[in-house]
Length: 327
View (cartoon, rainbow, N blue to C red):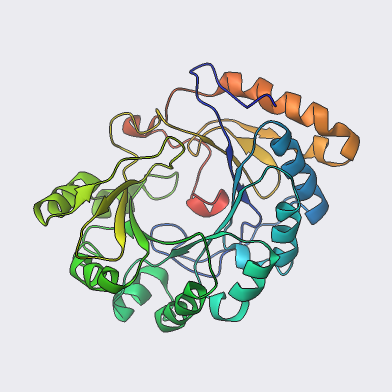
């Protein structure tokens, strides 16, 4: 099997696939006015198109799939999408990133369909702080859903929190209390500049290195990273069942270990979260006979992938907000 590789020697066994642009939250760092919809845009990929896409990626080495949005649980056929991914040979991990509002109703069905890993966005453990950031007072039901998910045998359950100065940067004590007895990884994600959040970024951006310094001072220790690990630097402490991960996109050499590609809900390949080019793959998703041509197109596009993003220069590429591509 010829693995997807770029001119810098990086290989790409990991795909983040958005299945819907819509989201039912109003997170201040992403969609503060909520999802407003869009007229005259192409429909999201159908299940059949998604299945062809995944078979094409598997032909060139796909091993890990993450299903994202918007909010992917808004797709009524999400269990069928998961099941079709599970039927593709070679895909070892099927993960989902969700805001967790449907966990208590649907997580068991997702698990039965073949979901292996789960990421849930929880930006604060304080109910009022959570409401202020997300626009919704739904933290209790999300935590109930997480309790249910813990009994379903997932390979890993991780929680995501965007690190926001003045909004949740004082929440570390609450997270430590939670992690004392919960064997999950909480990943703090440094706020990223996108096309429409410049003023918000200036007010609320906090360097992830400040949190890492605090963790080290409190006895947490950086763990070795497996070769196929994602971007998080993970810290552990002997007194805690859970771990803390740090995703710091502005740190030195952040892109050196990039192993992922992205496809939007309408089928555009994105070589980088903040890239300037979106290559439509949909023409090769209409017939099973186009699989070889899809694989060839993917490999040819890797020659255009840059060594890293240009966030330090204020260039955010085609990403107006993270709901458009799933982060």
